[in-house]
Amino acid sequence: MVKSAICEMLGIEYPVFQGGMAWIADGRLAAAVSNGGGLGIIAAGNAPGSYVREQIRIAREITDRPIGVNIMLMSPFAEEVAKVVTEEKAEVVTTGAGNPSKYMKEWLDAGIKVIPVVASVAMAKLMTRLGASALIAEGGESGGHVGELTTMVLVPQIRDATTLPVIAAGGIADGRGVAAAFMLGAQGVQMGTRFLSAEECTIHPVYKEKILKAADLCTMVTGKRLGHPVRSLRTPFAREYSAAEYGGMPDEELEALATGALRLAVQEGDLKKGCFLSGQIAAMVKKEQPAAEIVKEVMEEAEPLLVRAGEWVK
Image (tube, rainbow, N blue to C red; front, side, top):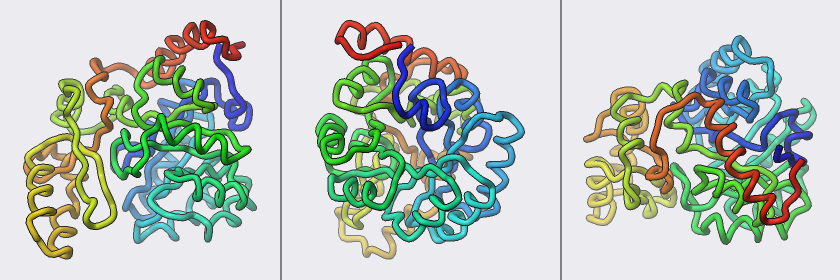
C-alpha cells in the first residue's frame, strides 16, 4: 500500500484529499471520503459560520475519522469561520483565495493541522515560516480559483522551496496522476473534480451529467480582468460572462453577474445563470461511484506504477 508522511501526520489510510469545493463539499461528502481512508474536506466557501458548524457536526455523526475544513479567505465570513473550526475542533484546515497569516497562531494553538493552498514559491516559503503542517500546490488545471502555473511546473518548485510535505492538486483524476505527482516530489494528492461523480456528492443531476459527459476542451477560465480567474465548464453562462468581461462591462456589473452563480449550478443546474466549476480532467471522469471506491481505486492504480518507477511502497 502506498504510504507517505502525510498519512502518519493526519491519521489517514491513503494520501488522498478531497478538494474543498464551495457549496459542493458538505459534511456528507467529506465524511464519505474520510470513511474511505482519505481526508474529507468541508468547504466553507461564502457560507456563514453557522453553516460550517452544521456541516462539521453532520460529518461527525457519520465518521469518527479526521476531517478538514477549507476556508476561502476572500469570503466575508472568513473570520467567523476561522473561529468555528477552532471551537468545533476540526483536525485540519486548508485555505485558499488569500493569505491565512492572521489566523495561523489561533489554529496552531488549538492543535489544528494547517495546510494552505499555495500557487507560488513565495507563498510556500511564507507558510513554511509561519508553521504550516504541509502545503497544497495547486496548478491551474484545477477547477474554481486558479493560479498561473501548471501542476507539472508548480509541484517540483514548491517541493524544492520547503521542507514540508507537499500535496499536489490540479489535473489529477486517476492512478497515473497520483504516480506522476509522487514522482514530482509530492507526498499526497488532492482531487476535486473526480469527487463530483461520487454518489455522496449532491450536486444537481444536470451538473453531474455535464461532468460525466465532458470532453477534453470542456473548460474555460474567466474572471482574469478582476484578478480572480476561475475555471469552469463551457456553459452559456461562462460564454456570456467571458463576452461581458472583454466587452467593456464595468467591474461592478461584472461582479454582480457572477454573484450566486455557483449556487445556481449546484442546487438548480441552471445552465444559463449558473457557474459549473470543473477542472480540466472532467473528461476523464466517466462513472458515478461511491467516494470510498474512488479513493481506493486511484491508489490501487498508482501502486504498480510507483513500484515500477522504484518509488517507496509499503
